[in-house]
Image: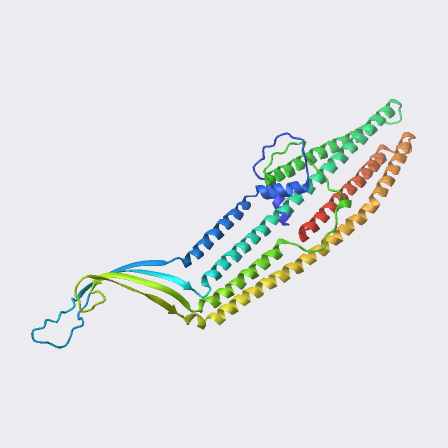
Amino acid sequence: MKRNIFIIACMFAVPFVVSAQNTALTLEMCHQKSKENYPLIKRYELIEKSKNYNLENASKGYLPQVSLSAKASYQSEVTAVPISVPGVDIPRISKDQYLATLDVTQTIWDGGVIRSKKEITKTSAQADQKQLDVDMYAINDRVNQLYFGVLLLDEKLKQNNLLQEELQRNYNLITSYIQNGVANQSDLDEIKIEQLKAIQNQGQLQLSRKSYMDMLAILLGESFGEETLLQKPNSNDLLVPSQIKRPELELFDAQLNNLESQKKLIKAAYMPKLGLFVTGGYGRPGLNMLEDEFSPYYIGGIRLSWNFGSLYTQKNDRRLIEINQNNVLAQRETFLFNTTVETTQESNEIKKNRDLLKYDDEIISLRSNVKKATEVKVANGISTITDLLRDVNAEDMAKQDKIQHETELLLSIYNLKFTTNN
């Protein structure tokens, strides 16, 4: 259904300007060009740039952290010495106080937080890239449907030409019969009708081919002429794949790796942190609380901090990650199940088309014999032109059935190759 919707939608797209060229394209070339032309490919570079920026930001956690602060305050009471000594003036601290500080801290050990964040950044970018691989891989199926659609139309056009040649031969034959008095004008008219039908069908096939080629050109970002040819793969040279190598499997692995990295960050969050610090200040009062003057000062040392708050939630956090991991595993199992069903169906489709092809040549040969016998009967006045046209159409239909079976065999093989990515 999705494939049909895509083809119908593209048929109403803006007409694509084509230029004449006579080039044979292979399916592999079309796959490669469609990926290079697809706008989504730009995301690979964006994901890589985003990863590099995030890694650079995480690494800056090892740089000294600097903060500047200032404050002015007024308080209703200040510390005072509750004694009086005759002849001694004990200074009092001003109720308005001012302070500006510059704090510099240097992390020595953060429990592995920065390392875990960098690992999460890498695994997250990898998961994004694998998701993009999955999205890009879907283009192959679109190309396959259009490519084999064109191949089928090409074969039908060839058969249509052969049918017109056959009808023209019979037209000439009946013309000679009329001259000899064996046939009449109505017999000739019947053949003319079939010729016109064949010409109508040729026009429809050509328009359909152009529509398919225009859609393929849009996907590939190329301009195609009417003489552009598509190379038909040889079904005898194609191996039927069995092992599933879809990019979705790599996506599931990348998602599991990312979740495992998040587990490490939970552990790092409740580890102790060790660092150096230096604080320089200028204010009133300074470190000497009894000196009511503006003065500079500094404090330096080593600081150990251990926040136990994350211990309250770390068990639930780990359980949530495990739930997400189980969800990914369930998705992986479902994908493999559905893909196995598809491969079974497509393998049976390959077998069916190969079985049908076994009898096509014999059917065509028999239809041809019947047609030739009818031609003799018509020449002898035993059969009518209607009988002859019936057998001509029957032979043509047998040949079209073979064309259909050959193309469907190729498509079913490539559908299986797409489903398994082989």
